[in-house]
Image (cartoon, rainbow, N blue to C red; front, top):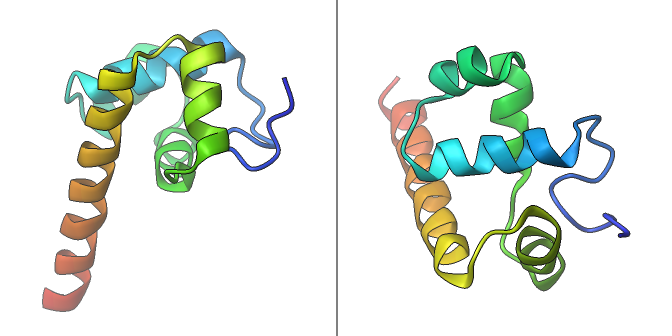
Length: 94
């Protein structure tokens, strides 16, 4: 599948590792926890999550290639938005 326009474009991670990272994030594991479980550096994990934006192409990839359900995708968008908002708040208060 063509990954242009998705969060995984030009990421050098196998799809099973990408799926594991998203699933662990959906289970509310932290970045460092995901790093320990997957063996991938926290910057790799963080960049994948940070680059994940809600669009049709990404959602199609997550459902068809990664195997997430529509409900899991919605939960992912909510968690990513919370993470972005928390990051913005910490930047403002720092």
